[in-house]
Length: 542
Ligand code: GLN
Image 1 (cartoon, helix red, strand yellow):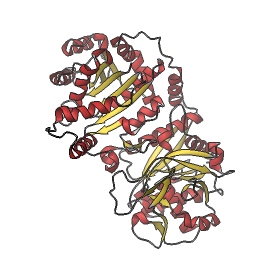
Image 2 (image 1 turned 180 degrees about the vertical axis):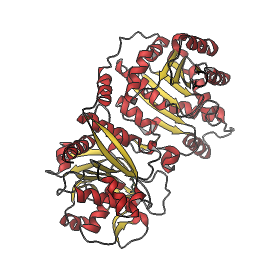
Image 3 (image 1 turned 60 degrees about the vertical axis):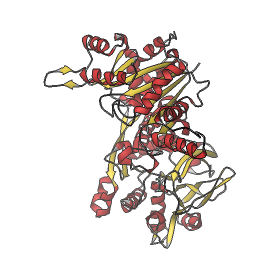
Image 4 (image 1 turned 30 degrees about the vertical axis):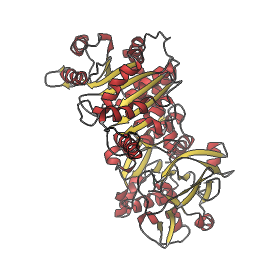
């Protein structure tokens, strides 16, 4: 029997609903249950793919090519269960489907309405493909009280009746703010949020209370009384030092116990040793390395969420802490002085990115890494810029560039208009819609034997996730290889360069895909482990 855990948020946004859901998923998994996590997003965009990273943070890409909310990254990192397109839906997509059905005539004769048509579509999504899974955790984006999340809340309310209360539990995540002036924790916002939730028909079973300070027994009892919840089901969720401590902290406070009690399940205590080990490694590393991440959206680190976590994982694999210096790439366009900021770092990473702004700064950073023998890791745009740099400065193609920045004579990086996926041909033109039309999702890549990446992966064929429109132009392969850049990973048909490396350098790798989407604390991605290992070696030299 599949049971559903619905997680709503109250009081304010950014309380970490995604992490809380992921942590509960990990705890249920540690008790031997199979889990799947999903997210319902209330905005009208069909997916987050066309949103600015400042709006939305990272776009997380699944194997099956969906552009999804970054919370799905937390779900994967905490549970190891690969997400799918069917694990994230937005109001926009729900309406798109309902309207397409209306046009087809599926509702012929009827008036199409929010209830039941939109709510039915939401319910169908929530329970789709969940057979055989013990627990499905569904996070509802937004904050209770928002107009736009109402149909989602109504849908999960209805599911409580449709499935039966023995298969559904409602968890409400709230904030219990600390007022320093009076030295008090305030429960009123929680009371109001629950009142709002009850007014739309949902009585939460469990309250998860984010707080900076320990919550006293009396505050706990007060919230229980005013919110109509058992005192044991009011769970304090205090701030912790590392996000990998969240499952341990929730378990100590009884969250997973309360969920199982709700369902009348009596399961043995979970074994959380592996979480304890990870936390210990993160908190007490044996050394530290400094990595410069040269990007464009650095004020908002949510834009590089998976990347930041993958660097932590690389640190875990090498027992070192990773200090990240987030550098705005445009800085390096002001001449030689700024680039000195890179002198003390043990590794330089250029992450994915879009558009011309800041690209010359990234090219300058790649050149610095190459010339100074600093480990260099270029991801997607970071690979493309490293190739432009090599074309200009090693192969002597002075006006080499990417056609992403406009027409140019030597587009060593160009728009890909045709490629194969399995035995299917995909085609694109520069006139196409921008939404959902990149090369997206998992693609195989064949590694060159004897190359650095061949050693790192210890495998001949790998699969990694993509999200880009432009590709390194294979027609320049010969010229670039003659100049010293090796194409060490290619698509199986040999048409698309997937990895380049520089054998004259201690560690210089550019990859067209996004390895950060597949790194997990318990299985650090081999490229990140190896990059941090190279940074550790480099740190011994300086
Ligand atoms: N802007 C580049 C492209 O579309 C790189 C994209 C990325 O880094 N994800 O190909």
